[in-house]
Length: 343
Image (cartoon, rainbow, N blue to C red):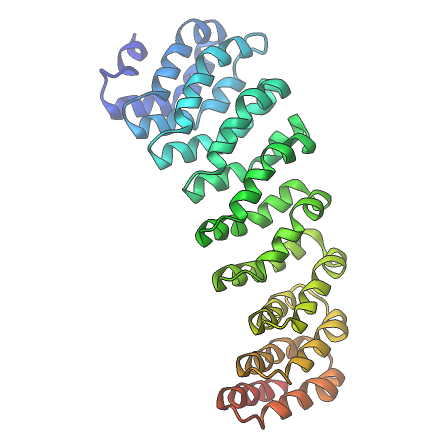
């Protein structure tokens, strides 16, 4: 009787919130028969509550509520009762309600099975994946693995991947930036083979984006991706592409090479830095653009502490000495600072 009265619109919002917060404990206490006959109605009522705080609390319990239902009645309860409420929450006006839903909705896939996931849940995932709020999108991307296990990577790539690619190529740079920031997590969820086939070229394209914030975020991503996939992957996939940009006619792209090296040296061993990176950086010391040259000096200062003394004496110092005689005052200043570090 208490639940019947206070979980509806007549009870105080704070009381209904407390009921929503403790609903799973109540469900476990009363058992499956009372849950089926009485609690399902009141749980869906909480999901449709007038107070956003109540809806968010109830939304956060959807997965647990459905998991605790007896297997033989899960589908019969979920399809006509819970699923319609979930469809309404996907379009809720409150960000926190959608974020709460997005944190658990992927977990419904193992309960609903492959066919129901494809037919009913995937369209909802797509809506949340395109939500304007980053925490909603992040909660979807963070839980892709649970859906992948149910419907398989092929179905997942055909349904959700196009939406991710669409967002990654959005004309609004802030939308692109949001996807870039989630990409390492997405890579970890989907694995190296899928990433290389579907997303690697996209990550590389961000390095030559017209917006500096995108290029900068893309270089930061490289370090995280190497940490996930390993050095061998980096050598075969990333490092060669990044260093090839040093020959790009656009000086901004040549600078991106230097920015990328600055982050990659943190995850690359000295022999890789010495063999592949130092020669390319040294060549850029002759670049006609001062901004490139002083970034060469800054990059040498960054890598010097991690490489052997012979390389410093034979390659790094001669390069910095030339830059120390540069006509540009900024180039000269950064070269002097780098030489101090090398001594």
